[in-house]
Length: 388
Image 1 (cartoon, helix red, strand yellow):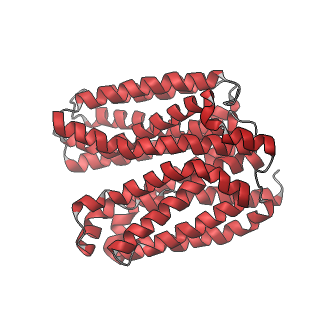
Image 2 (cartoon, rainbow, N blue to C red):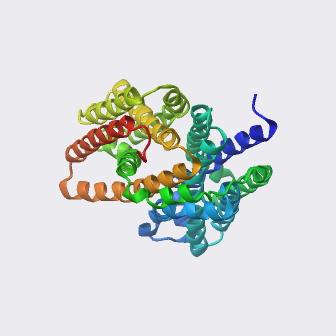
Image 3 (tube, rainbow, N blue to C red):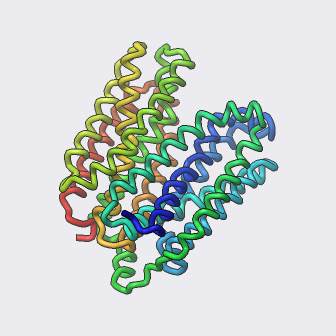
């Protein structure tokens, strides 16, 4: 049985997962409505998803320094407040929309890095289970944000929908307050030296490559999967349903992969399964089939692989480190490079498609990247810790 104060922390971690993706995934379905309402140029719309990703990339390496000064739990509370303010600001004008999006990127970037460190710090014997709850909550509410934002906006307007996220985040911030009793600063000198030198550690770079490719694969598939299907004659409504299936299939992997990874002595079996699902799914898209069952199988494979890879990376941050300081350091480094690739990957692939007008080359490149991820993840698995 967990002590009462740790039960409250567990609830807090699950609630953090609920608010970390909804502010981003709620936007794509509302882009046309926002554009008409604020008279925005089309070129500006892409920044509503790119700005947060760039914040993740640029701020992640500096987050451990904030945690060493303020403590993990206090820094997360500040990030929640920033996130709530950002959600509320987005409903007023184009300028406030962009500024609010920047605030959202800052708040989420900080929490992305620190939640794995909090889990490693307070739940070292339950890493897999707690990480599973966290990733499952994040994936579930990400899908809900994507699916519910447009219908709710038709009834209430897009501004109230986005600003309601501010209310949800503010409530989560209030519920996080009791966890300040557990506030932990990363101050030990030896740990700080390791955290500062993470960029010179070979194992850290292998983990960063794994996380980076995982992020690029997920966001590229998420962005272009419907377009790949419609370009081959699949109706737009069917392509939309397949994207929904891609997100729905992610839920089992979000829960079971971290739990399973923590129980295994070696994670190489999971690495092989996840990477092979990626390779088979991407190779399956090379076949210009319009069969509903065939496309469904492909989307399920890609959904399981993408979220399975994310959950595995989140778990490895804790499994392959020996303390919260190391976890925060590698989490910051890996997520920095990962989200930078996530920000530029879909855009660069779109430019390549515009030049060659073929998905074949792009899918082959993604398959090669999946093979590279397999090699780097197996190399991480062979190490006892990332800092060895």
